Length: 375
Image (cartoon, rainbow, N blue to C red):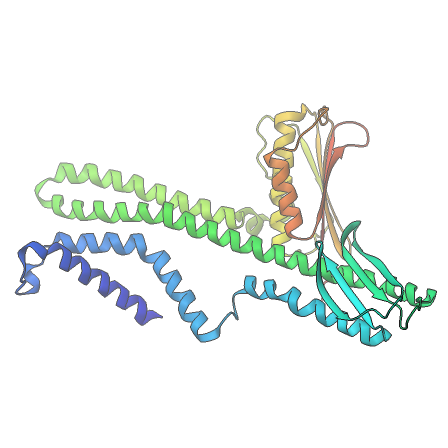
């Protein structure tokens, strides 16, 4: 990979040299190549380095390892591999001539055929009140009906199957969200930071030429460069902050929530277990972002006098609750961008978000996330 990227740099330099010396060809030596062509080559390299090297890395890796690291493609293929296996195992374990799994209005797995006039039973696949699909099975012989004991067993198996489907769906959502975030970061780097660095490189070349003959102009240009470097540094910090707020690493989740900046907002209290158990990094970021958005809404819209943030952690669930004593949600309330963002963050991690009236007055935001048991 390193050789390919070095080769790309030489190719860019060579092409720029050919283009810039085309009117004066043939070129007798390297001294005939104008000095400013090196600067043009540097600008082209800075502007195209990130996307080109990223594409080269993906191409080489896929050539060597196939889709081993392409988790989006792997998870896309999972429904075609996992569910048929489960349908076959279920049919074999219960000696059923026909099993069928439907999800999203489509048959995703089927095994066997229904005997003539045999009863077909449809069992809903439900997880946390959400219907994910339907399991259909038939009697074992012609005109046969499944006994009550088998139906009870199938209902229990359907709950496990629905849980498996929900976990699989959550994984697909997580992978999709991660890939979208990667695309956003790549776009920000390519469209924001790369042109900024290219401009700095260009100004450095001008500074080098004017430093000796025009010291006053060079000094002004150095000040502009200093401002551009500060802007590039701020852009890098913004990208880092969007990946993971630094306060989570510096202060921990509870203290980071306590230090959320309140602009003309009501005083707040934060309640959490002592000590706070360790949580997955993605859950910490989601809780921090949702708490920030909920408190921001309280400051702007609630006209509240106090806000309470509570964190409750059990063996397999962590719950964030933000309550204010303000005016509550208006009649005919329609969710805005902030509420949609909170729901998306919660759904990405397989959690549940509820926004509604508080027990006495005001608004309550509750976000619950499943967490794996600690080992």
